[in-house]
Amino acid sequence: MKMNYILDHEDLQYQCVPLPEDILKMKWSGRLDLAKAMIENRLSLPDLPKAYRARLTLELKNIGHLKLNYTKTKDEVLAEIQQRIPDFTMDEVDQCILEGRLEWIFIDGQEMFMGNTVHNLFSQYPDIWGRTKEGDTRTYKVLHELMDCLPPSGSDMKAHIHIRHDLQLSDEMVEEGKMLHVYLPVPLQRQQITNLKVHSISPKPRRMPQEGDIQPAAYIETPAKKGQVFSVEYEFDNVTRYVDLSQADFDAVAEAAAAGYPEDTLSYLEERGPHIVFTPYLRSLAAELIGEETNPLKIARIFYDYITCKLKYSFVRDYASLDSIAEHMAVNRKGDCGVQAILFVTLCRLAGIPARWQSGLDAEPNDIGEHDWAQFYVPSIGWVYCDPSFGMSCHLRNKDDLWNFYFGNLDPYRIPLNCDMQYDFVPPKKFIRFDPTDNQCGEIEYDDGGIYSGKSRTFTDLGIRLIKEEK
Image (cartoon, rainbow, N blue to C red; front, side, top):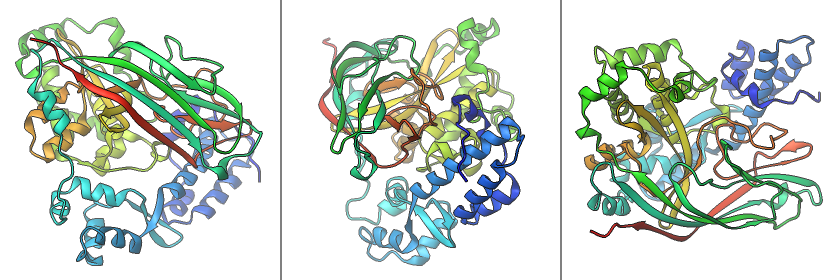
């Protein structure tokens, strides 16, 4: 049965509406095709409430995301692990499942694992990487060089970043001649970005990002053809203020907080469904962590320490298939960079501390990838950064100087693309996005449907370097 209900961007708020129990049973028992049929049958009923219809329609797409994410069998997982640890056993795989180290679901009666779950296992667990010949492959060389030349607190850290971003559809996703609508992320000169130069965008866009765009993108319309590459090349200077929060005047922070927050920060105290939601569990968690503390800077540090020291880093499936991201992280006690950032933002807002999202690319020399982080407002100081993901990784490796650095700071090797989460494009997409949270690698759709697989992206380092101030 063909469904003609097209989701609006605002319908995303209904992602946290509970699924009917019978559909939920089919979904998590792995009978995804039957769950999809049940949803389509339910959607055929007349006069469904808007939120109910939107939630079911979202779930149709989410089921497709599950099949895209969970692609490896248990035997394939074991074989991949044994490439680096030959004596690893199936009993040890089962133990990793028991301890929550491997991400899996049932599909058609079989345990299926995320495609990148083994990479996650080797990068996050010292007892696992310690059994390999190469050991821990993360050196943090670039970040240690940064720490060696930190300026005085309140001064700027600078890096020059020059990259090319290419986006391409696989041949099987190309329908020759059909009109494509492409949203290629391009930074704007704001926040950390100065001296921005956009050298080229190909094909020529119909609309360039403009001041005020929350998730700026070059909008391209072009007939589809095999081998076509959508490309943008740009360079800029990233200028980020270094703040040593360990030296903050806590009395001044408390005094300023008592006087109230600036008007332009108050919107960052609100819920934003489905992912920044003050659920009963999150309210309880925040209250338990805060205890009797009243200083907002100390409270933010309590939240940072809890996330980076008590929880675990783990790749998760596509954000579109997570019902409520902050609670997902808190309940499952693991998540990736964006999931951690959203939990930090949510806890801060629950505690009355303005906090917001920022995301884009982590662009260290010859190592560029998507990344998310947070900002929070400190009375008497202003907006500062927090990167729980980098902080967690540094804490795991006993790099306390870096762990403390990422509470209050970002390294300047960043490309901030999105200044908030869950905003639509200009012009808006017709169909729901592959990633409704933000846009880091690009979105593509046809006139008659969205594209949710078969995209590849590459980031080419054309010159990334730290700018050191002469003394």
